[in-house]
Image: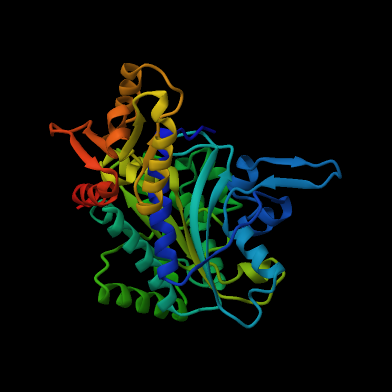
Length: 420
């Protein structure tokens, strides 16, 4: 678990602001759920034999003896809240969320035990069109962040529960024939969750896994039709994809469409967004049968990707535009009023007022250390003449002497020049 320091938070705000604006444009409403839930919610939804439930959840008993868990993912909480408050009764819902999740797993690049996710869930729609729109939304996010050329969309279909059960039997039979090639994790999964063996990253098992039966060859007719309609919609929208027959996802509740956006820009292939369809989860948690599809993306890994590729606009880094500097204590009151006036007239300007007194030399040093592009100087002469001095701290330009009533217009022009 790690701290997010001021130098990093501006980058997070840029990412989160981009996501929030995009969700609103697509008609998704934000939902906020508690970070602590009943343990049974995750055991029932994620699957008791998954790595998350078996090894990674932060679970504890409260004073009443109830078993509680810090949420390891967002979908189960979103479904629980939607059911509890009647949001799924004879209606469709498009919801999104963001916030911290918790898993006690081995820390790795771009992943922590407290990590943050953005996710969306669409309920009550069973056609391939909503699957396609969810993927299109994620593609638009990559485009707006400048990441589209650095990620790859991988698709697969898990079919219906019945078709997957039949495929599971064939897969287990295949793995039993190659039992001597399975590693310890795979042997453990063989009886509980054999599809997860397909997702193994063990290079020694790669040739054997490549020859394993493919789920796509065992799909039921309805799932195959759904998948073909989805790929047709993506092709019509100009979205490139690759079919990955080993893509199974790590959670038990998925069915039919599954997808991941992956990147190699962080050194080795990494998933930056993953999701799919989970039509049985609402019923599994006690609700009426409700089709659903969604995705989640890890913010830490995406922030790392943006930073690595230097794709963050300078204007998004939260640097100061202006440092208002009273040159002596006698100018403090007028400098404060002037700073408030500028904030009222130019609310988009990032402005900091010098506080704490000090010599003129120390004040100038603080103005420079602030990182601001410009400093606004107000001293005895300026007060007498109703003027201000505008000093450029990052450019080789002559300072300007301005009438106070012309200040806002000049600052607005300078700000628009920089942002253009």
